[in-house]
Amino acid sequence: MKSILAYLFLFSSFICLSQDNTNSIKGVVTSYDAPLPSVNISLKGSSSGIQTSSSGKYQINASPRDILVFSYVGMKTVEIIVEDVTKVLNIDMLPMVQELDEVTVEQRKKKGQEAMAIDYATKKSIIQTSYGFIDAENAGYEMNFIDGASLNGGAVYLVDALIGILPGLRRGGDNTVLLRGGGSLENPKPPIFEVDGVIFTTTPEFLDLNSIDRIAIIPGLKGAIKYGNIASGGVIIINTKGKFIKREEGSNEPYDQAKLRNNKFDKSMATSALARAAPIYIIDMEKAGSDEDAFGVFQEQKKVYGSSPYFFLASLNHFYEKRVDNLFSSKIESEFKDKFEDNPDALKGLAYLLEKQNRLQDVLPLYKKIFINRPRYAQSYRDLANMYVVNQQYKKALGIYARYKSFRKMDPIAAIEDGIDAIVETETVNLIALRPDQLAISEEDRVDGDVGGIRVLFEWNNSEAEFDLQFVNPESRYFVWSHTLENEPKRIYDEKIKGYSSKQFLIDETQEGVWKINLKYLGNKGYDPTYLKTTIYYNYGRSSQKEVVEVIEMSEKNVNRELLSIVARSNFNKR
Image (cartoon, rainbow, N blue to C red; front, side):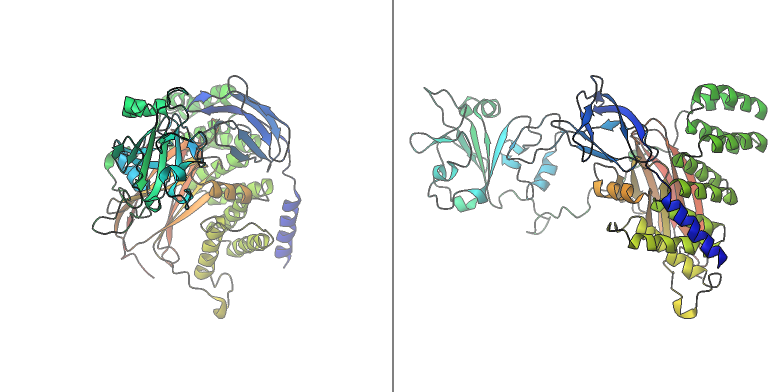
């Protein structure tokens, strides 16, 4: 009872601690590696802000949980939730795709004809022409689109249906229309029409207005470049309903875009190993003949790199794996803990390395310290509870899990299905199922945790880290889970608001063979690397459950590399 009261007091004290210190944040804003000047940067909800310099640089003050807003004309707005460790934010802004009828897009990658054919049914900015499909988003010139459903239903003739819908469109002689910029006022030139790939120099009055699916209009100058002088008055392209919709092979059903295709993995899609050139200080340590000489290199290089926790972590990893004298690694480790005791990301990086060394008792105090630093973070609860489990302190672990669930009941934020709440639920059930006697669980309250299969849990120490995980199954089919603000904004928002950086996957053991997981690291908006911890649980939820921990440093960007291989067998022990 005293133990429980002590923990309740401890956690209530943690929650009262403030995390609202002001951070001085700096960085560079770019787009396609070019600096962006005059980008507006402000705190969300505030009317004041700053702008980037001519070289794209900025510096601004913000507190943890503030939202920094980066905005620039023609670019997608970027919102970043500030954390306790946020000091550097290098932002890469992407062009905005205009969701308007009139679209002019530049510097967009050209889309292939097959891809546009697939998108045609659901994307109204794509039109089929005698030259193939054209997507207004990457055409490189101005196009205007009219949805057939918006045409004047009461009109008898096509000209009457078009007038008034598009600005600059006016009636000409002989029941024609004239486009803005088509010829001159004295000598206006009517546009040509293209209906389902057939060119007409006069208005196709024979066309049933109800059969029109979409219309695209290209102004005179651009039309002449595409179609020749015959189109100096512009081009009106008409596609009729159902004509160009791609069908499933062997059926009349529309193409199913949700169906996974073209996902056959080829070995050339990933390099053979996670490797990069070591930092110069590590190279010098490796050249050192003795442990003492290597420590001397560390002391000398510390004068230059000593402000970086990742210099210490890389040095520690060298001494853990390459040196035999624990005295020197202990000195580096002790200095690291004193110097970066208030940096949760750095402490988590050290925890990962120690866990890889199987120094589980030394890891527990680190997660306690991180919890004190980050009492609002869901990951703090989960990591501390998990480390109690690893250290066989099951009642304390269950208490932390229960405390988190109680904390979340008071939180109005909805759970992301595969977020931290799912991880905590999975591990809580697993703990109760595997350790009922140690937890004094009554018979009626016991649960079945026989999930089976393989559970893979990824954790990373920097919440800004962006990366893609490519899973390749034994049949060489793959899917990609993308952890980027661009592709998963809701997921990233949930991580920042709740405070977690982890993701679990369950692999079906009945699909026997070798699974490969590849990694493409995309950066973390800063200059330091990110540490990724992967825990593979075999026979998850069974008495024969075992786990393997791997830790790697992510630093090399935009290279798809082999991360690990997993052997799945349906005949694993099922005790």
